[in-house]
Each structure stands twice: as C-alpha cells, then as structure tokens.
Length: 591
Image 1 (cartoon, rainbow, N blue to C red):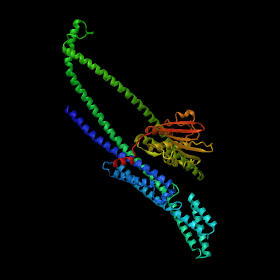
Image 2 (cartoon, one colour; image 1 turned 180 degrees about the vertical axis):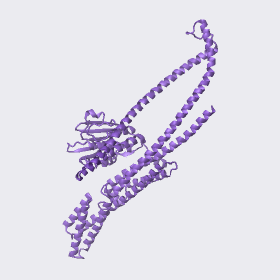
Image 3 (cartoon, helix red, strand yellow; image 1 turned 135 degrees about the vertical axis):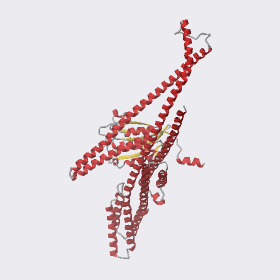
Image 4 (cartoon, rainbow, N blue to C red; image 1 turned 90 degrees about the vertical axis):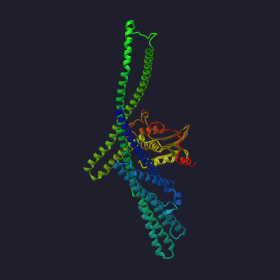
C-alpha cells in the first residue's frame, strides 16, 4: 500500500513540473500573440501614414502625426518584447532563439527603412511646405516679377505637375532642362539685370533635383526604392513570427502529451488500487452476509416460502438493518445509473460533435492539399513549356506562373486566417468603422477590377463598434474582395457600399454591391466549407466559411440577400459589447 502511495506522490510531483512548464510555454506564446497584434497595428498605422499624412498640410506645418506617434510607441513596445523574449531563461530551444533573433534584426531593419522614408517624405513636403513649397514659391516669385515669359513658366509648371502626379522622371528632366535654357537666355540678354530671376531659377532647379532624388529613393510603390525594402522586411518579419508561433504550439502540444500520459498512468494505478481495496473490503463484509443468507434460506426452506420470502414482524434487528441497507443501496444504485445514463448522453453528443469536426477536418485537408498542389503542378508544367518555347512566348507563360503563385499565396493566407481564428483569443477594442473599412478597401484597390468600381461609406463619422479588429478585418476583407471579384462587367457603373448603424441593442454592418449576384439555389450553401457557387470560381471555397467562423467567435450573426444579375447585400449583426479600453483603464488606475 505504501509503495502505491509513493508512486502516486511521484507522479503528482512530475505533473506539477509539467504543468509549470506548460504555463511557461503558454506565457511565452502569449507574448508572441501580443507582438503579432502590435505588429499588425504598426502595419496599419504605417499604411495610414503613407495614404493620408503625405497629403496632409497640418502634418508638414506642425511636424506631428498621430499615426507616426502610434508607430513609434508600438515600435518601442515590440522592440522591448522581442528583447524580453530573447533573454527569457525558459527558452531552451535553439530554433526559437534563432527565429526570435531573426525577428529582432528584421524589425530593426524595418524601423530603419521606415525612419528613412519618414525623413525623406517630410523633406519633400506638400503644397506650400518642404521642397515642393520651395518650388512653388520660386515659380510664384518669377511670375510676380513678370520678366520671364509666362509661356515658358507655364510649360515648366506643367512638367512639374506631371512629375508630381505620375512620378515619371522624364517630366522632371524636361522641367529642369527648360529652366536651364531659360537661365542661359537671361544671361545672354544681361548678366546683371536678371540676377534675381537667375538666382530664383537656380534655387528652383536645386529644390527640384532634391525632390526627384527623395522620390526615387522612396519609390513610387512597394516594388521600388525604400518602400520595396520596407515591404520585403515586413514579409520576412511575418514569416519569423509565424515560425515562432508554430514552434511554441509544437512545444505546448508535446508537454500536453506528457501530462496526458501521466494522468492516464495515474488513473490506471488508482483503478488497480481501488479494485484491490474493493476485494479486501467485500471479502470482509461478505462472510457475515453469507452466513445470514444461509440461515435465511434454511428458515425459508422449512416454511416453503423461499421465493416470496418477507421478513417476519419478529425478525431479528440485524436482519431488519440489513434489509434497510440493501434497499438504500438499491436506491443509490438506481440514482447512479441515472447519472451514468446522463453522462453517457453527454459523451454521445460530444462524440457526435467530434465526428463532425473530424469530417470537416478531413474535408479541409483533402481540399487544401488539392488547392496547394494544383498551382504547383501548373507552375511545373509551365516551366517545362518555357524550356522548349520561343522567347516571345516566355512572358505569357511567366504571367501564368505568377497567377498560379498568387493563387497559392491566397490559399496559404486563408489557411493562416482559418488557424488563427480557431486558436487565438478574442480581444475586443473600439473600432471606428469608416476609416477601418477604407483601409481594407485600399488594400484591395490594386486589384485589376477595383479601379472600375465606385467605393462609398454610408454611416455617421463617429460610428464605431466594439469588436475584435483582427477578425473584423478578415470578415470585411473577404466580403469586399468577393464584391470586387464578382462585379458585373455588363453594368456601366459598379459600386460597393459599406453601411453601419445601430438597431436596438446591436450594431449592424452591411456590405452591398451591384455585382452578378448569387443564384437562389446557392444562397443557403455559400457559407459551407469549400462550397463554390460557380464552376469558374478561382477561389479556395473557404473564404465565406472563415467569415462565418470569425463572426461566431465574436458572438455575431451574418445573413445574405441576393438576386442574380442585381447584386448582393451581406448583413452582419454584432451585439453591443461593453469593453474597458486601454485609456479608460489608465484613467481608473489614476483615480
């Protein structure tokens, strides 16, 4: 008996250390999730800076930007969290340290590139500020002097404007060349009379050259200059953070397997110990009961009432006590049977749910493997064709390869969204829906069809909801992307409208379009996993399923009304969740 107790005590001690290790891993995983969340906010605020502040005169006048303030604050927090992660003594896996160090270095490069872009962008200025302001001021002074032909100044201004709008260096070269010709012309007429005009033109050329240098260094999009480098580092940081998340999940699962093994072993030992104790106890109790039963049987046989035997009124007190105890035991057994039946019913329900989940998982694995393998097979075939094709056909095949790779990337992103929606906890925060939806649409505006669609928002400027920003981003991104993808080419004007309003104790968000619509026979099934309403669809078939699962996570509902050839309206209902935001918590602590 004492050996059994020692074994159980040893297992409890081991379990304690395993649980402690699980808590440590879970804490570190929480830090990674927090870093991911802050990194997502940094990306959003950086995008807002590029899209809004570069055309905001208040920013260039005061030098202050709310988006830059948020980026710098979050930069420092992410830097600190990565440093803490690197120095945590509980991290013994060298791969985790390697990815954490890589993430730290990549984030440092990202900060460096972003700061360089910020400095150059501020130097470029806008309208009456910075280099652009110097250029405008110089031309304006030349116009006021009136000694330079207005036609030549107008041509210079036109080339300057074309460069600012299109970013083509040819316009800048033409403007500077015309300015130099004008200087030479003024010098030829008189070297002293036009000294002021010549100085203004030289200043204009110097400012324009600096503006062109900054513009070229920054880049016109994410594929050139510093913005290309910034985008590259952002992709690398996403990769490192994802690998860290995967590593921590693997460690968590390993520790859980060890804990489950210990629990099962402990349960087996307890069962064996219980059986042994039951045998000893029952053996001690059965002997007097058997003797009593033999006497009862002998007495019953003599009276001939064995089967219908009842205790006589003058039965011994011990027999009466035994009869009462037996009846009480029967009652307890019946109650336990009822409890067991209830537990069995719950287990049956859970087994059915697990069976359904396994079926969905099998379908997910089958379809995902097909969706991942199909683009790779296409790329492989295209490479074989390119190897034996003429040079003029290569670009067409490369375009096909790019489409296949983008398809594969879209499928992987949806898998990541599916996994993170299932695994990450819900974090509510206040979201201003108008700017939030605009940012999401801007992320899709480079789609080939987006430029043909009119996007609008119909809601009050102050309209906001309390929800999980990551999941709301998944929901609106999928719905807006579908509205763009399935626009009706036959219609002269295509539109997407985002609406938001309150209805009772709920917030309502609507995404409306006048696209091709959905056939009535498909409407009830479009939210199912891997269901495609069209055989010509290039999607993976899990986008709207992820939308549904994300809405369930934040306690909402979604419905759709659609007519073929008219358009669709997706209606999202969110409960009015009350949350204490970060600023409110800080104020309450100060009070």
